[in-house]
Length: 403
Picture (cartoon, rainbow, N blue to C red):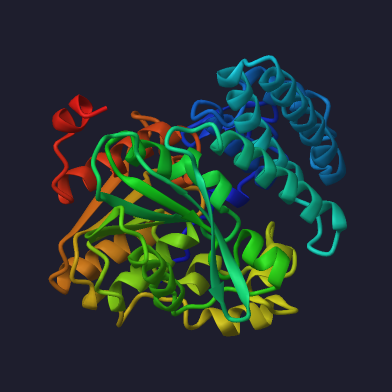
């Protein structure tokens, strides 16, 4: 089999910032950092920043320098967090909420390239959470902080009910993947379902967010175990519809979600927001020089990429997703810089084994063709939330009348 070209590693012919089929490419000589900046830009349209502030921060960075990346994102995060507090004190609640939401994503970016052992990483992460919580306390209904006991530690989450006046709401469990965390899910997959009458549980599972940073709990292939614990928690609530619990995992979370739905049959619908067929195949010839090598080792709980590949042998969907019983959506970018073929492999295998599977390949012309629609997350949210509403029997015209 010929190895698939990974666009994330490609140095483009143009050396100046320019537009690519997968979105804005700010630093052609530093494709991994350009990818993260593209992600930041996309999330501005979901409330996770302001375009001008993002470009202001980038203009002050040394290209490829992780310290200046941290410094400049931290600067605008501080500014928005402080302004949010000031505006709240004046009674300007909507402005305060917008400031905190921007600050949360800026703090997420500020911590991104820091070493796992760097104390500034947990500090920035905690400040991100604090901004999310300040934003969430002014939502109506108010956002709830959730902790779920797990292997001697905790999984941390946020529960948001839709303002639609339905007593027992369908609920979406939304989590990220290798480097996306609960506080980013609002910008990637959670906002649109809430608009359509669903509650959402945004959560850090094993190998993610606070579960990794505070308890050192690495990821695992059999994600049906932590997802089962998440569903057990939902079953303790009297405001959700137990028969309409869905799961959406983004990026590597696309593997986690599909694997969980293969064995956890309380799931009524599942989405791979960015599909992963085989982690080791996705990584290809990755070594210690891989753009996210340190992060991979941290998440997988190993000390070398060789050990990561050994653990990665279990992270493949063959022999598992034929057991999925619920509707399954794969929402994937048509110019995904990590892999397009991974999505077609998942789709072909699931379809051949009788799974009710849909492949939504977002085209370059639509925009949203990047990995997890990072260049245009709104179109990804719309496609996934509308599919969920249709599959869970939600009449959006009726929901609109119940606001």
